[in-house]
Amino acid sequence: MSLAEVEAIARAAHEGQTDKAGRPYAEHLRAVAEGVRARGGDADQIAAAWLHDAVEDDALTPRWLQDAPLSRRTKDIVRAVTKRPGEPPEAYAGRILATPGALLVKEADLAHNADPARLAALDEPTRTRLAEKYTRMRALLGLPAPDRPSGA
Image 1: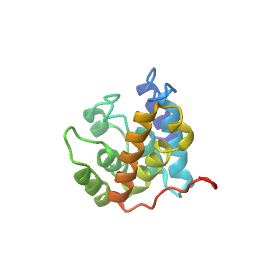
Image 2: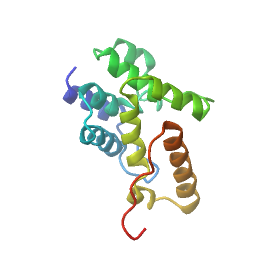
Image 3: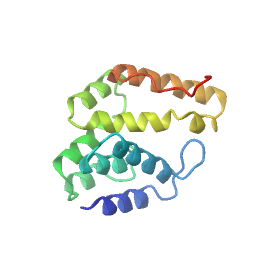
């Protein structure tokens, strides 16, 4: 499956969904895919970036992922970054770290989720809660704190 086909499937699967700020969810998927590309990710990782929330958000089923004409590596990355109900953050981070290629996808996801402009659209309690959650996950994954704008 080509990256254009993966993108089209991801966009269709998330059609009508919005993020916490009310923006079309496909904007987040595009930002994560571009973040992976900018960080030197390969086609498998970019495909996984487009699909990174599809199973978790019930936009696509685990069976769809299993049967999709995608590389095993892309499927493994998507499974690694898919949170499981009741799963402790430490176990989630451990699975990402144990899956080749998954850390880069999660790093791009966290970078977009923690983008100050994106967080600014949220109410203060939500912004604070999410910022703490993303900071903790970055620490569990051994990722450095994101760069802050000068003067911040």
